[in-house]
Image (cartoon, rainbow, N blue to C red; front, top):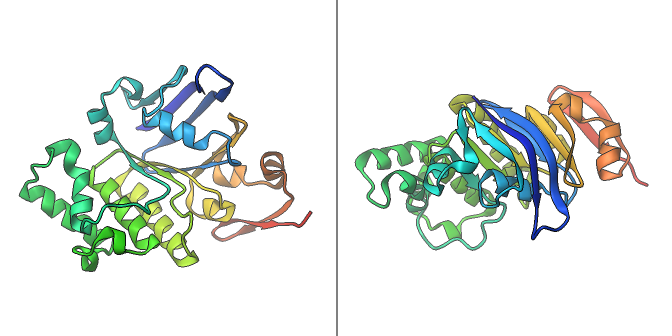
Length: 255
């Protein structure tokens, strides 16, 4: 199955369009990276897919489900969201925080099978030793793992991540993106994430959606999108793009 976005338009308070006629898709098992400058509409697009914002026009369909017509409780079972920042988390333990991912199915009446599922997820994310540590006492990289683990506890078909590697050190950037890529393949999830680092996007994304001024500038396989011409057109910077075993290497040139 795939998530298909067609003819999507959105504007705030009937003003200038923030998103204009967006068309793209991401299939189960794929990671789609969304690229573009600040203010080009990336986060607005994520909020439309999550039905936090209602598009003026267009459709968002997963398989045979019209996402925009689903109730919030149904969306929570279909799509999990991992926010960009997690600095103000409540002082709960990791196991209790990840258990919150089961709320769409159980309310707060957790059963033994929910506990077993959460313990399995903690093991997958190498979080067992942190199970009874308070989330607000953890490092940024550890908290990001916990957020993704909670998303997995929702048992979604789609996971949306808003800049999952922002403010993380190099080790944690790689660790988090390796988890995301593995989840997509192993669990056959459609994963969408906004990302600024072109080299990391090239390494871990199957497809890229490059946005400019609320429009789709380019969409397709990663190695086709990461080009010097595209980067110049979208970011107005000069680069040298070369082939490496992991994908493409992007080197910035000074003005």
